[in-house]
Image 1 (spheres, rainbow, N blue to C red):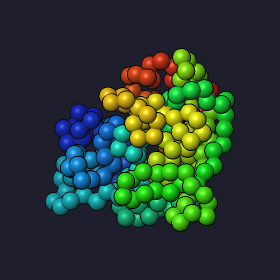
Image 2: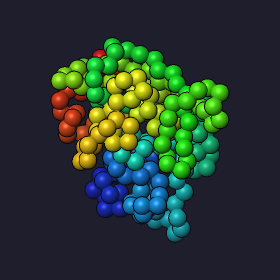
Image 3: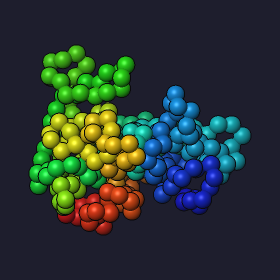
Length: 238
């Protein structure tokens, strides 16, 4: 079931797919995935309100969160409409069969291709993630692969595929490798007013009850710095 995109409760969220078990939506940049201390409108609450409105539910609608996007990052996200669907989609995340692909623009000339493996540790006091030794307390392995799709004026357009789902993973690993994300104020020296150039462009999953594949590709918004480099028409292009 695909719903109109101008629903006021969605606050700029676009819904690409919705049925009785799963929702696939586009989170706008700078919206929290779920409620936080800021009190700003968040994706999870808005989707719940939308489902309640569309289906006329008397109580709060159930929406299960199975993966996240960092607040400044926009793009595709899947949510569950039942607890059974949430369990099955969460299993896909753990088993890395729910595929997530990103487009990013980095500073500097990134390699044509690379496989990055690091160990990350998150400081809960600062919400900062850093590279650490494998034997460090709280260290978690982080793996991703990337391909450079184009370069211009000291910037590189990357296609990034996650093999693990760690907090701030792409941002930290790319910065550590020497090509930080454009506009990343936390890890890349981005300046005030710049929007981080990281976009959740691709999502592939197995429908939690029908067992059929669902795949989506959405290019980033037509804004700086995305307008400086040719954006692929499909995720596999390039």
